[in-house]
Image (cartoon, rainbow, N blue to C red; front, side, top):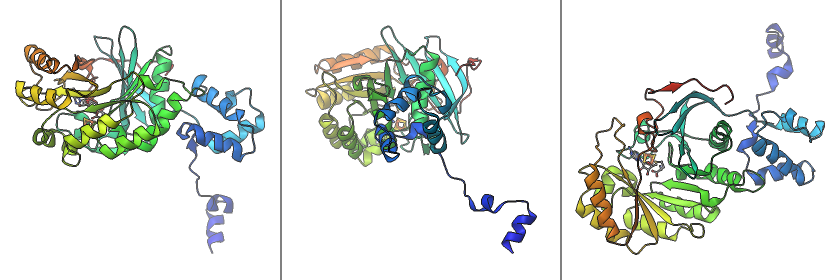
Length: 372
Ligand code: SAH
Ligand code: SF4
């Protein structure tokens, strides 16, 4: 009966019985998994290095272009993996200060943003790790979206690969400060860091990679056990009752636990643990708050970035005036703390880290360049 129905519909039995197999993007594999694939197929270990060179260093877009691999090997790769970019550039905006924001379409229709921040001696890429974020910090636009899903390793890596190509391989530093909480996507984050830092893959120094977290304490420990990178902790309040209010994750991992986990984190040699403190007018910017913060962090080997709230956001917070920012810094310095005031870069294009929600209208939209 089934066979009759299938014949009637003009389908072959093969078509009926073959469920579609999901083919993984090769950029979703860690260096170890590529090595395993090579050895499972009885190939010599150097084949893994050939693959990584073509995918990550030469940036080819199909297996066919891997000219020093045999036809059989290329066919095997073709059958086993896909390798097209997992992102498509939808818009590029350039801020007055040179900051560039890229809006990417994902294959499921979601969108993410990536920001390139050029400075005198470096170009820093701020990458997204999730679509939205579950943690709901009250001052953060990404938090207003809620968590939609984790990004795959290829979606995170393609942010780097596509923007790097668009900027003459000029990216020097990567910060996980875009959309999402990177430690809520730890497995994929670790895979990505391994690809970024492996000398036969992208070969970036771990000292040039910073993971920013709102304070998922157990995951901080796991991250430190698995890779070596810089850590930035978004503190934003030095009193539990205030931090509970603006960063609800604090109810689960309060300040003392967070500081304990932070100081235990193994930052690379000659690098400092970083704390970030977004200054919100009349919320966390008083002299008293500065003293509490100073007492909390004085004596800890760390740096603090004080970031005036980016007002381009529609959220009901204001940035303090400049005098208040300077006074806050002065008080912290009296505790012998290394404090920097970080300007919000790209604020005119909602480009500042934490501002990314991908659903707000663009300000100055450039044509999508053809080569990305
Ligand atoms: N989820 C991670 C990383 C992404 S948020 C984290 O919270 O650390 C990156 C940084 O942007 C955080 O330090 C956050 O406090 C900051 N941020 C969020 N909204 C901001 C705003 N409107 N102005 C300035 N910084 C903001
Ligand atoms: Fe999520 Fe970080 Fe925004 Fe908080 S500040 S909502 S953790 S992205």
